[in-house]
Length: 275
Image (cartoon, rainbow, N blue to C red):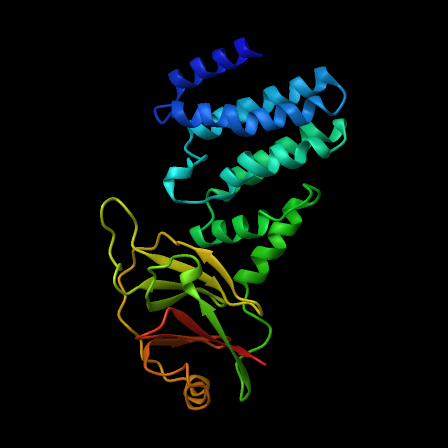
């Protein structure tokens, strides 16, 4: 196997301008080692080695194409989750005859995800990290995407529910400022003090999926320049009247299905959902 790995690396170095030797070594010592151990415990050594070789080839391709991110990148994408965690953790649990087709499907799914918007990538990373099986992973992720991207079935009406989302959970320095919708129930919140890119880093932003239990999506990589919005929404006015935490709005925004607001002196995001 070591000769195969050396040959694969040599070929990759000659093929890919973006080849990252350090990332390759980390891939070998981490995910590949875990995958090899799990396959070896599965029973058929020859079949396990064949699957491991295929995994190595595809991993090298992913590194060369820039699909696989190092931890230092500060970014997440589905390909990195799949090749660093899901495949080595879940593929060996499948029956031997299903492993090769499942590996091919994971490559196609991961590669297709590269064209998805950053917030969709982050959503899949958050949802995918808890997966316990590769069975129907495509159907599961497509269902999640449809739920997040399609307009909710219920619109804001005369009655509503207010929720509070603590954005400091993701970034202790984050001071919520301007907000814009990425989808009917997904917002991108910009840090008012770090609204522009600096030092090679993206502006500080966070995505939030405004589901019944809002989900933080982490940095969005969004460099859009915004101004605070002062859109009047009666549900936010009502919230300010009945909740001492609310009011002193910095920026407010709403659509047919959701309303959100940031405040001058808080790291929390106020979220209004239909009852």
